[in-house]
Image 1 (cartoon, one colour):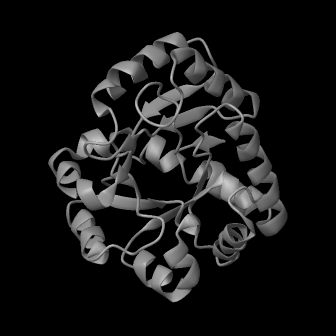
Image 2 (cartoon, helix red, strand yellow):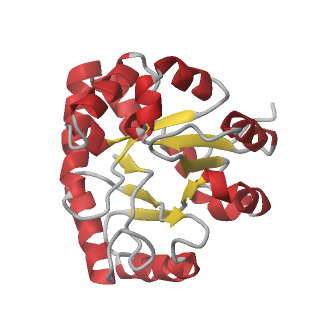
Length: 236
């Protein structure tokens, strides 16, 4: 499996506090069969300590270089307050310097002008991936609004914990509905601690039961490969 959303970098957000904790998380990920991780510390202006991210990321990378796991850098961007930063430094905030941007919205409202923001990202060549929309109460109550929103050009990433039921039965039901409708491109761990990787594995088994192995493999592994190694376009 490939994880494209997790909080493994120590000392920068609400994830681990020490490098030892970061390494434990990576060990747990490896144990369940994850071999590639895009780490995505939060980026929210004036809230998280983003200055340390790159340095701490490379410290971890050096520490685990003999593990069977590859690490890449990205961010989970709080889009409402950070759109200008993203547009000024696309390579910095996208996942693995690709064209894909992982972003989150508030959990309870639909920000004014968000559709226009998504279209603006597209005009700059950025493909937005919305993180855990199944946990957004506004979307849960307004399925049609959610579909209209993603039709502006958003890919969808669900959290493993939502699928397992950790965020409640309503969130789990909404997650299942999105999977049943094949609206999901990615499932990720959104791990903040080592135990979260056990949940990632459980989520895979549940989705396989809901939607079959082919679709599960697609949203836990195959779609992610495009972000890790974008396809080389042929000029023939």
